[in-house]
Image (cartoon, rainbow, N blue to C red; front, side):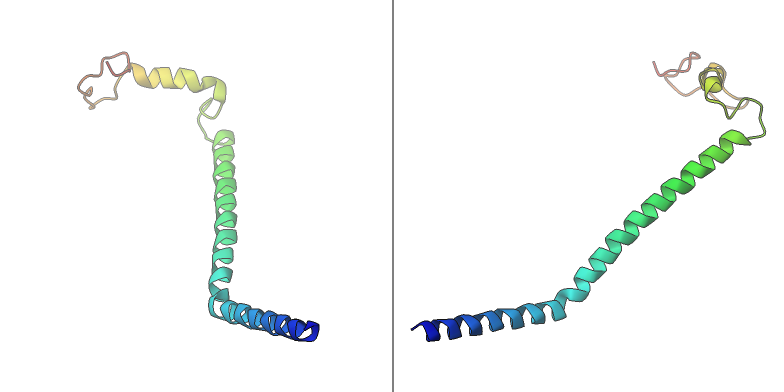
Length: 102
């Protein structure tokens, strides 16, 4: 009995292995493509974030306008832009001269 059971287990194991190899041969390229896409997407995401950060830092250092690249002036610049519309621009309906939507 023991010899027969071990033979059946060995054959069952070989059949499982053959099925696994056939499945990998059929669908392995798709798994590789998915992994490649995930790694490539993550690399592109990190590259684009680093590029955007470098551009923002470059803009802050050499903007050519005195004080426009410094953060302490940000609130003053925003308040100045909200005060008056530019020449030739109409005030939007519902917007008062204070700069907010009313």
